[in-house]
Length: 198
Image (cartoon, rainbow, N blue to C red; front, side, top):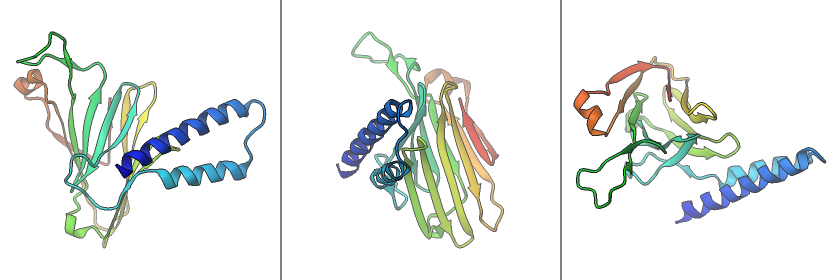
């Protein structure tokens, strides 16, 4: 409940700041001191997780247009995709309307065993409109950011891996939950240093 209240308050503050800045920008720019104070306040209100969690309710949203995702870290970055116009039909539907389905689930593994994590933070960045991930290990620090590209229906995962040992980013997915894709065997895996979903 605390996180939900914090998220609502932070969203309200972000909306207020955006509308205030838009209204004032053409007349009088906001003083730098106020801009800095609002930025610090938004950062203070932003939800953050300080440890990996296996609980699927510990997620943070990110999106662009009608493509969005919920992100959670538990040994890998779990990315559950959603799209406003991805419809399907239930086999035993209690209604005659299509149901919004998930286009899939992506798992991004950075090759960090849970016991190797020395410090962890996943947080929402309201100013950037993104979800930030930082994992510290004895080999160095890994930072990742998930954000949407507005107008392109694209989600981007940017990774900055400063660990001394070379690791391969393992991208499993996207796995699709719709029956048509399951029959066709879509899904799979690839590797690289970042990912783009559109």
